[in-house]
Length: 211
Length: 201
Image 1 (cartoon, rainbow over the protein chains, first blue to last red):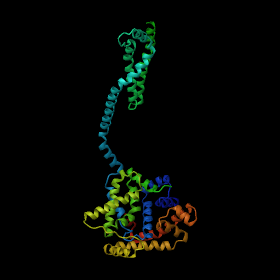
Image 2: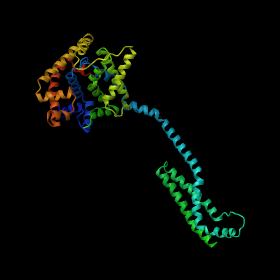
Image 3: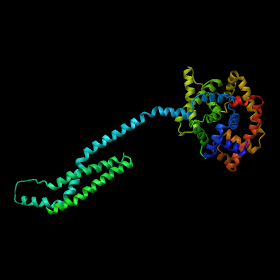
Image 4: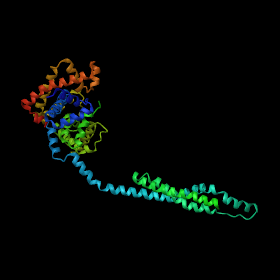
């Protein structure tokens, strides 16, 4: 037998062989009966040196264990079958989790919608604030009773833009769970919608200026 | 070099369905495990039965073994639990044998128990033991020291190298050569009547 191989076997028996070499030798050891017999004798030598009294060094234990194991399915097969047996519920559980996340997201978005709309309408009213201000200040100066004027143009624009905000929030929240392809499509659609809105905005402003 | 790498590589092979790799693990640890179980049961034959059961349990549980601990540590726990369950199920009190090498009285008691239980096994084991001891006595000093430090004291190659003031590679070579010399004598015993098939299963 190859002396280098036997030297590796001796080192492997002592857990002193490099992991990569162990992998290769383990494969050979599991198939080569002569090598396995030598491995077994190394164990006997160790047992004899340690004077393991009460232990039969020639006990047929390994043969008995091997006979029982031979009658059993290989672990990879048995484990695979066990895994296949429990696999059916995994898609169901995944679908349930996904549905739960979607439901929570929708509820959360509904709860967040008024808050999300507020800053947007405030931001949008800023450029056009001069128009209602001009109408309100003279009335206050005249000592007239309190009156509240709701600017018409921002309100109309808020109703137009807020759904886009909701959509943006939804896309951001949903992007955590969606696939990149779907996310890109949604974002593309959103961007198209936004660019459409943005294209319309100057026209609105232009109209406002005209007014 | 990583401790337990050889066991882990064998375990991974078993987990992938290679039953032959498990034989190597059984061959390596059978004596240790029987010795361990002997702390709980009276006779060697019963200890062998329990060790066999522990090995089979370990094989069936191997898919759950992730390598967080050393394989022998994991196997040790299975064997201890199996031995305790066996003792409880047979309504016996566990008998703790003191396996300290300094306690000669304990050794003698175990030897007598063994004599009465399996005299043939003892004869064969004694022949193996005397052959190994004779082979060790015939070894050159450096080989004998290396193999004894390894097998009896359980030192790593690095520790042996420090103790013997030589490189680790030399230690590896000395231990291998010592084993080969002993193995040559041992093969003669096995092939001369004891039967390697019986010994190695």
